[in-house]
Length: 480
Ligand code: ADP
Image (cartoon, protein in one colour):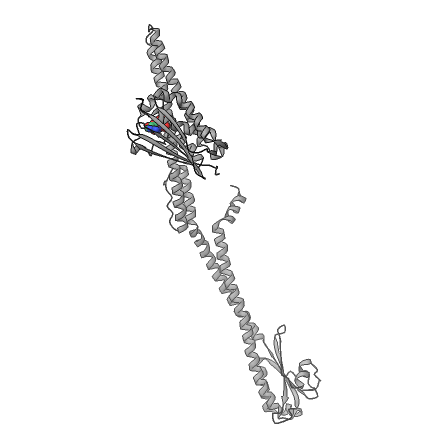
């Protein structure tokens, strides 16, 4: 395997996908929680800072409101209060009188200047404004200074307090770094565990694949037994069933091959015995030669009929797609079969009767079905009495879906225990009797295959010494 293929195989593997899932699960929730916590901390801390400063600023504004604005710088008690506010929050306090002139600036930068900003103007008309500047990280609030005793509520000035949010930002930064380190450690641990776990999770699959390989190579166990998961147990069960079906098929194929060899060898052995005995008698009379040659001819005929039956059987074993379907008049088909078999029946002194209850035309493969029907009727004649009392009764009937063929005989019958075996290849109830009358043991196997290819059914009933009945049912229209 090339390097590229190995990498591609790994990328396509279940193990790799499990690792990816673990990585995503390790990083994503942590990152979401981390970012969410930091953001909500920031919002909450700003809110708290804002309300704390605002309430203190309002207290301050109320105090200022009762004082003379121009003399504020001389009010040491107030100044120390302002001082503690600015140092506590790292802030700046400015006071603007109603002419918008700055009368106090804790930074001492803008004293005496006029302040015209949107917020101050709004506050000068009585509104409290709070602005957060996230870029420069400070909160600025402007509060109107109104004497609570002034019934008219005249604004005497505006108190501007700006406090830094740097320490909130620093805490946030610190939290971010702590969170990130925790997250990286947790993700590393989860990914490490994930890689180990994914290897463990896919192990049963790898075991299955190894076991299949060793079954294929013919060593190790003959069955899969990986029961870690329900799914693997099901796969093993299905696989074992498949294997045992294949074994049965293999055994039956082997049995068939050995049966075929045996059946084909028997006539050859007889021919060799006959030829050898003639060879060992150089002075044998012509009559003996003729008699032996007749026997040899019979054996050749037998060999030929076995080979012909085998060929028919092989054709029937092929898929149903090989059927040559056409509309066939079944009454005529049966009549012609009966006509062909009449000489054999006459020889056996068996009476042959055909009874057709209605005209039947069906979509069938004429050659294959005719072979099936011929075998059934020929068997009924062959395995019959030859004392002149024997009869074979063939009847044809149909309904709207199927046609039915019944082949009844007054023959020797089939033992109960043999009824389920008669369709097996080379199965014969009485081997020597069947051989005597030229049977190969393949006829009913061919018949059954042909009927099944037409999606039909066959059933046999028999009473020993009284006779046998074969019931056949075939659909009138061919179903794919
Ligand atoms: P064979 O070539 O030996 O006739 P078949 O497959 O046609 O082979 O039949 C299998 C066996 O079933 C026969 O050997 C015979 O023992 C039995 N058999 C089939 N048809 C009849 C029948 N109508 N009456 C009695 N026995 C039958």
